[in-house]
Image (cartoon, rainbow, N blue to C red; front, side, top):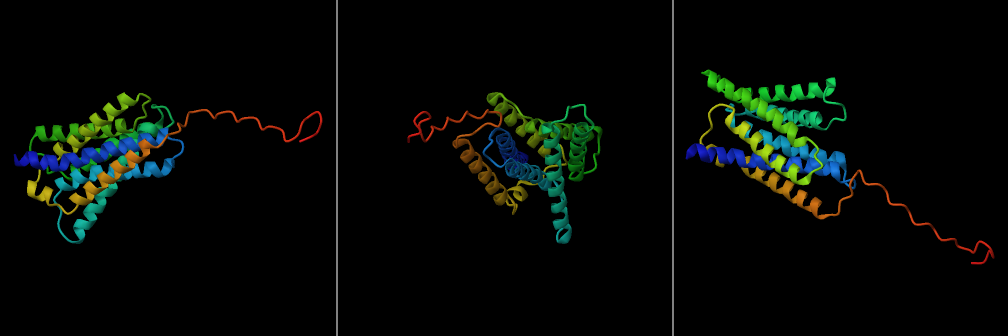
Length: 235
């Protein structure tokens, strides 16, 4: 029961933030009236927070300056992982291009580093296999979350499934879970939930407003009526 409470406190905020980040990222690619760069930046921030929350819960760092440096390092790694995965998914270059393959490989490498940084040394082959599979699921799920999809129903289901898969990899792939008291009384719990509520409110507002797709053609303008008669030159 304690492990279940710990997993729930780490899993639920992470999955919610990752789903919201993917939905905002998709909104930035479909609505032409929005600032694409600004909305994608917000999506990257939500995704980084969703990655950082379970990772820092799994880690055990010293207090003082070392703790601040550790948190900054984990947040930077989370932001780098989200950015590289999004580039691998939305790049205009073909999948066989060097940059896109390099971005996908970078996402896998960053996933391995993230899980290894918060894991204890594996004492058996099963723990090593679990961490390796978790890194692959983490990288693949993040890339899939950012993939553009024209089918809205399929995209919604895919985003939900991948958000759950990535959050599960972040929770269960690293070392042993912490005690539930440390999870539910963590000082960053309420700010993390507030960030998720902010993302949900922003997404709700964006979906209520009429969207103009980027691929839609411009409507022809109505001809301007002449101010005077062509034959008589009278108004």
